[in-house]
Image (cartoon, rainbow, N blue to C red; front, side, top):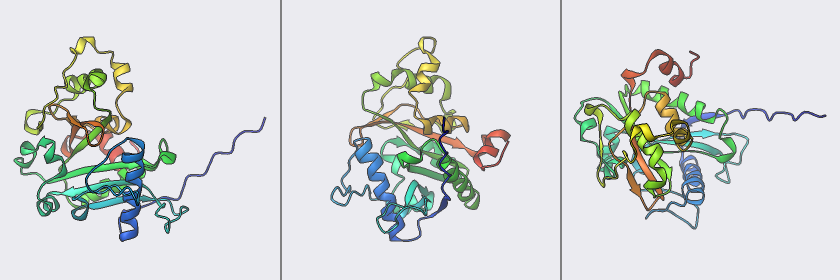
Length: 260
């Protein structure tokens, strides 16, 4: 029996979007994931050119994961992306993106250096490999360079029916709620404690938690109080917060891309 030959790992490159081509390719990937795959929409989404964009993009940094083997001329070379917004960039934009969904006053009153993570996605063909590892390693370098102390951002469950997500939302509330000094609160408040903790099948509930949220939890992330149902994007959002000072040694090594 002939054994399948494993496909070699792409020679990834990670950089901040260097030009309009990188930016457009990131928006093309975002369209494929957030609009075509998940059913989202928005006032600045360009359906004709298949670009997912909003008013915050011009003020943010865009960390892109590039597979050089793909066609840059066809805007196909970006296979992963993170939108990064520091406090000074948010001031230029008028606010953080997440401020429309969550009251960020506890974070802004902390006096600590903030970085909002958003629009994170990976091309379907690259999920389950090392793509996210490469993005996180570059993100760790960015965090160190800007001396970031608090990372935060909304992360999404697919769908807008909280009852269908009662178990995972309740698990997050009971096991991973942020401490009071970092506990942001949803502006249009959807309770997350929909089930008592004793009634939750933890294993089944965790199977419903998206991989990105689980990864943040493993790194010591916590969630704000209440979910936000985003009908435009067809998602139910939670606000994840990560205090870099609270990472234990093993988590910090993983975040930096080192081996624990």
